[in-house]
Length: 81
Image (cartoon, rainbow, N blue to C red; front, top):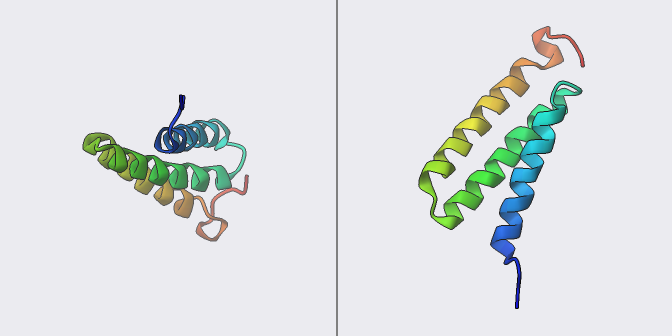
């Protein structure tokens, strides 16, 4: 008997990556980008599961994180982490 299917494993990895990147985003701006990417992956997971509200919320979180990453860039005069 299979305990975890591939889609569930994909979702677990996406959400775990979100958690890790969120926890470490103050250490480096690259964790903000990682959070944005992992939110996209979680949104894809939700879409494949048929959970539309979660899919939309994760897509919005990804856009918010990407905006934070771009606004935190050294070219915009922010402090380097």
